[in-house]
Image 1: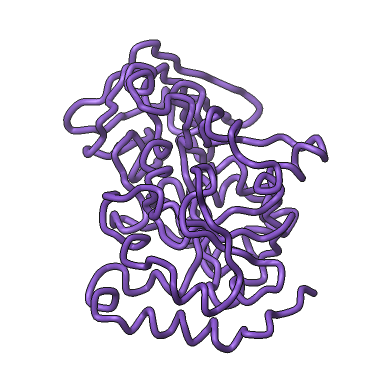
Image 2: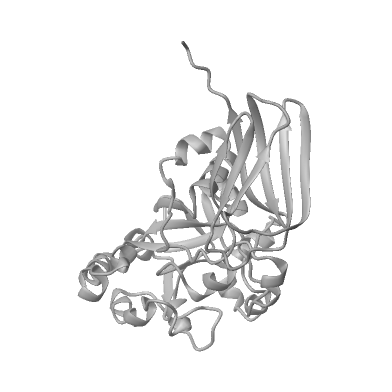
Length: 326
């Protein structure tokens, strides 16, 4: 068990006082001081929950474990090796880094992005208790993003209190390096301080639960929630909001706010009993009413369905017809 910092009590006071500031408590930011934030692609979440830890990039590379990276390779190439050996979190959601990475971009939209290799198609947020994490003896924090230059790294309550909080919490991203200020933990972070796992939509929550084995579903289902608001996610690119499955068809409702409507390579896979079927469309474009209907050839009491856009898993779930006992 990791020990606490000698000024742990004061760190908690600093965070509590921050939450009481009028410019924080009277805005949507009022709950930010309670948490530190880490987002990752949905494909990483199952591994994290199974292993019970967030690991540093260097740890995963040294262990030969697969990494689904959402960061820009150019930025990562300039990041200090000691930082790569830390678990990295943020003081806030909706950072400039997330702005460029979040969502399923079409190839056309991605090619016009400032960071075309930074891509997190289906982001999932881990919300950790800020007091629990920041009072750990192996926890440090910075005044700006650790992929930038001239950042400073701190540890104490006095330094935490002196951070440029109004710039870090600035709505939008007027001063991107400050908004990317980070919290880092050496090598690995266990999940004891994990309070919530936020998905961007109900459809993505269903997908995550489907991907988890039964024991992890049972353990985490109460912490896995869906946010339909924009206070965690930018919601600028393509994703599926809701899905309705029936014995005769599957209905997918995509976000109408997307700035990246296509074209995509659409792939839908169906598993029915021991048979597999697939539907492919090379140039799928989203348009009003942003609903895709997949009719089934026959009525089925159960099946598993997966939908991919440009090979990114956008939805997966199993339908089972309920038996009515009368």
